[in-house]
Length: 350
Ligand SMILES: [Zn+2]
Ligand SMILES: [Zn+2]
Image (cartoon, rainbow, N blue to C red):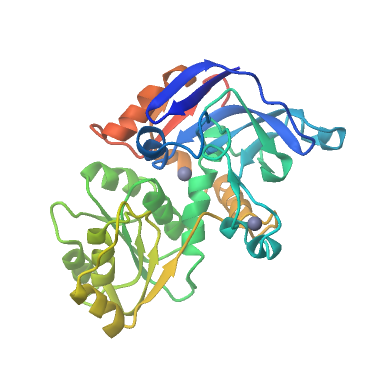
């Protein structure tokens, strides 16, 4: 089968490899759509995966073509989404089914072979069946959609009326879509390019601010009558953005830290003072919940896509065929043109 094999940092070879040998608890998934995640860029071009060679790609959906044991026969031919984290099932976090915080997990596309291939071996446990109304592109975006939902679920949204979202990339835009679907009255999106505002405004009701042109704290104060935002999602992970998140939160407000840090986070003393004096609550969030119950992030997201409450695929800005995946990576890496989600798909399925 064809696969993109990362052989060393920056060396991604598109070549024939042996199709995976299935263990009893695994299924062979034919990949139909695979999204490129922002984290794939440093993984492929800067830091590498945990070992070489590895097939990257952790956001994908497809069809079950083989199963490792007769007892999983019913899964054959099923359209599936994939939770990419393979928990150890033995640590304290796994015992209480908080698999996203597993202390010794495996991960499709970074620690073991993932979705930038024709076929992937996936534990049956990690599969979630898709209703017919959920297409493969949306299903390949379940992972980021669930990361976004998980961030929101760190907070009790009951009395929240206004929310600021710093960073309008894939996750920030998905958070905005979720907030709109939950009926949040005022959503303030803060990004760095006009196109981000145009894209998100077409998917959710939101007032956008380009922070290259206007100070985000000033913008939020203006929009909230000088009070500040009740809830802030920080989706960038830079000192500047985290400082802005603290500065534009109202007294008694909450900040959810979503963005992965690009380096050390060294906060100015005046910013730190604001956390204390405004009695802010800071939340961390990581990955998504997949307990296989109706109320986990993945079930909620599938239902929200099925009923049209959110449309993750609306954020796809570029599509490439499997043969042109490298081009997709370069688009996302070089950022010379506007991107939100770059999707690799097999055109003959929909
Ligand atoms: Zn990702
Ligand atoms: Zn564990």
